[in-house]
Image (cartoon, rainbow, N blue to C red):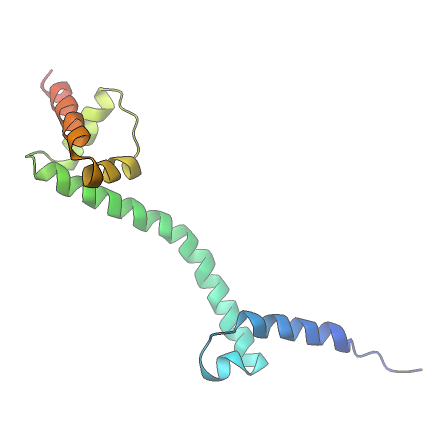
Length: 119
């Protein structure tokens, strides 16, 4: 009886890992053992950073809103509190985009927030 070595299955598994390691430098893209280590680490980083990206973008949007609001003599927290009191339900992504591309409507929102804070 012949010995079963799972040749095609093992080869396909290795080819899959080497395909995923394509573009890695040096031995990491050519030697299976190093490629597997690199691919595992890369997949861990990808998983982690898909979650971190959401946090990073939120921080960016807040920084942009804060800069636009401070240019008009207000703080970010006052602005957001005024919008909340005015029942304006725009998220930070939209507010950031408005601050950059649509300054007239953003200043109208600032006036709305100011009016709510003074009342």
